[in-house]
Length: 78
Image: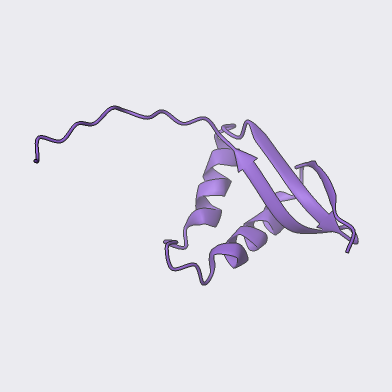
């Protein structure tokens, strides 16, 4: 199988939604909202990197990077 990796382009979002949904469908750690999170990040313009993997012209994979902010939460529990 030959894989071509390229930037996400306009019109790829519906297939990316499907691929993301399928990728996490039976993952025990998933809450099955990952595809909706990706949609929201895209709408917000918060995807720094968004790449698709295509085989025979069809999107079969997706990877994205978005900035996050971590806080330093300290628990008083011992």
